[in-house]
Length: 240
Image 1 (cartoon, rainbow, N blue to C red):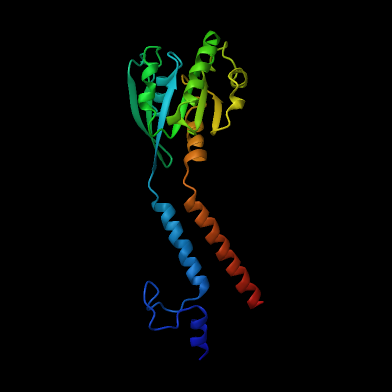
Image 2 (cartoon, helix red, strand yellow):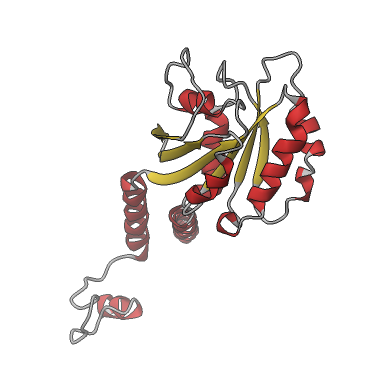
């Protein structure tokens, strides 16, 4: 009768069907769509933390280790120059940040390339108050951006030591280093003070979200919400 015809329209009337749909009951399309929405919401809730590998580079005395300790909310009262490397895992609102802090002394820089593999985000720290070394730090950054293993890797540049009166603003540094010529990757320069923590954690979190946030789940969610709202609107117009 009419019920059988209704089931047929939704492809569930063939008792001999095999596969995942075999034996499926005849459900209302709206119920199916709502089920899909709930499934995606459960997927969102159960999504594990995304691991992100951050490579932290810059000249010696740029403030890299202090910045790393601020990211990890650790005490910064005793900081010594990094002779090799430091590794820290930092939890940051849905992300597990595995941060590699490599020493910036001239004799250590040739070994930077040993840590390029599998880098998700490059963080480059500049001492904004040490204007005499702007040319040197710009050259090192340019060489990093030319590295094949870092091709396309997003770069977050911290214009550090903004707590000092002699610090150059981030805009001046960006212009001096010709950052506007970077076309092959996402980049951002941010004023910060690793000493006070200002501009460090929030910037890093936002940059990770904007460059590494999984998009497929949210795309599915938007599509499903749109379908459900459309179905509800259609049913409402039929009732009226």
